[in-house]
Length: 467
Ligand code: BES
Ligand code: MN
Ligand code: ZN
Picture 1 (tube, rainbow, N blue to C red):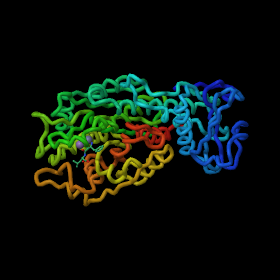
Picture 2: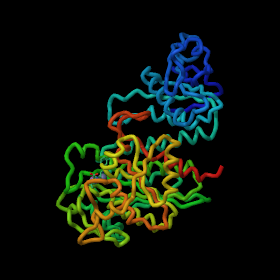
Picture 3: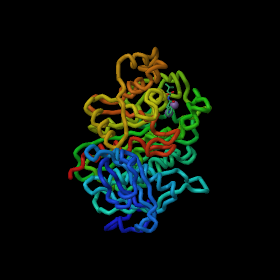
Picture 4: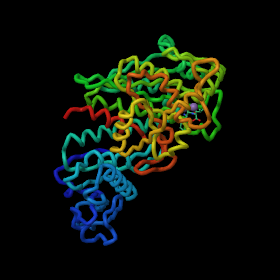
């Protein structure tokens, strides 16, 4: 939606004016104060709607509860605003305005709440979903621009992950990577990937008619406090390969590039947000398909760092592509690596769609990312990295197998990835298998791709901005 900055939103003719209400406080709106019943306390997420009947410039005023004033935070504001905006959409509103208490630092959660709630993937519907087109806000700060830019990156990521696999194929991801401003992209083709020694990644890709594309996008600001790599799992489709998935499990496997979509979403706006940190985005894009040329159980692969892997199950493909991508990232001499991947059904079983799994080789770094997520409303739950999980992947013929026991699968995948990260690099792994693609609406999100991870990672990268 278009964000318009005006002097005074109270005076704007629009469909709905949204005001906030704290428990035990009056709102800024006399009509709400006069007509709201005692039962409307202003608890977090509570709403109360009135028709103004010409008594105010807007057709409606909608009050949304922010709870107790002293305990309000970004999550309460964002989710409250999202709820209010969904109400406005039900009213078929086209233009809305915000009159939010000016003592709140509200630009970022308000704009993100509104934009997230107003999102539906309807590109292929001939009858479009109702969307709000204009939003009036009264304070001009650089935070409005920042919030709108983050929202734009999030929309990009959600759109891409919602696209069918025949559209969002490796070549398309590569093409998009080359279209961003303020960054420089390099795409390596199959022959170059072979030259770089990425035997694990290539094996996964070899069963598909769509060739792999290895994508490296650089953001190099004039002044950088650190050098960080963000690696996204880019399985444009995961059929399982020869160990093919049953139909129900394959259904949403176009979303197996959600990690890549997140990373691309970040790089689509990083040139505008300009954090003081060097960022390298890395995606080993390919498809996992069964065919006469597909890799087989029992094959022994050599990853970029020379370690050998016996293929136990062709459906544990994400870790193979990430193995080579992580080696590549570490060779860049980065201080930190964050990988994000729809990696294991086991993580989905453990945490559902409420939280993503997080693992890594540095407790402090893990805590920093969890905290960064809390701030934007993305939950990460730490899973253990114990030797037992690694022992299960011992192979008789190679350095390791690509799967271990049926149980503890998310941790096993984490231990597998660890083999490809050098010890001097701080690393976290985000398993978003359960959170990247929602089967039903959840909080401020509609069904489908959530863009999970994007705001957490961007928030972390922006913490390097000196203001
Ligand atoms: N892409 C899947 C994981 C996944 C499952 C993502 C459900 C989103 C929703 C991954 O490649 C996979 O197939 N993992 C296997 C690993 C197993 C063979 C060890 C799994 O989790 O079943
Ligand atoms: Mn798989
Ligand atoms: Zn997969």
